[in-house]
Image (cartoon, rainbow over all chains, first blue to last red; front, side, top):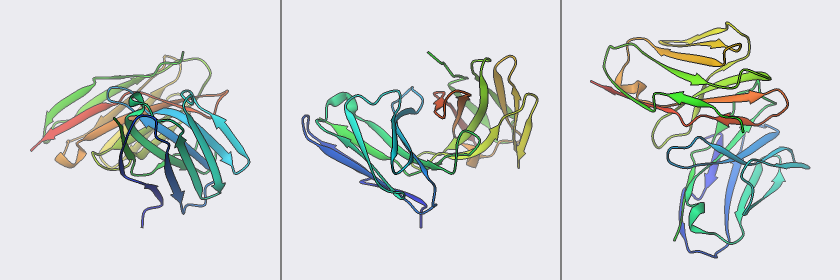
Amino acid sequence: DADVTQTPRNRITKTGKRIMLECSQTKGHDRMYWYRQDPGLGLRLIYYSFDVKDINKGEISDGYSVSRQAQAKFSLSLESAIPNQTALYFCATSVAGGLSEQYFGPGTRLTVT
Amino acid sequence: ILNVEQSPQSLHVQEGDSTNFTCSFPSSNFYALHWYRWETAKSPEALFVMTLNGDEKKKGRISATLNTKEGYSYLYIKGSQPEDSATYLCAFLMDSSYKLIFGSGTRLLVRP
């Protein structure tokens, strides 16, 4: 079984709809991250969480919100989806800070029409 | 704005060729440099986390070097195999932040 899972894996939605992407991990890591990947660009950090009570904005948080329901679960919401949020979204986890590698989920491909 | 550059953007080699690519990052306030391997339709997986100037790391046929003073890291693949085909991502971490800044990757295709 995968250590970091994401649901759904693919989603097509319409402009203005609310959508939630979910991430679960069995690695027991405190730190969780949400990234988006667009063609020709690197992974960009949307939000990160160091523990259940510590949530921080990344470089591109506008239009997104997150919820850390438990150590193992970190959800990303698009309150009102727009076409330029069409992207591949990755969740990741890590043990501690920058000296620890991050473990990525399989990604969610989101298309907003 | 912190910028992490990777070159080349893509690379096609024949099976058996050795190859290398570059990651350039800001040389000030360096904390760590990560390398990840991302196969199509799979999750990125960590190759190396490097912290010290002059550091060299190796995993099988893949190795990496780090020069923090001039702000670059090289990734080498010796005797490329088709299964090495993937996008190789580097990510820079500055000491004042826990946030990784990713480059856009080098996409490697190894032809049999």
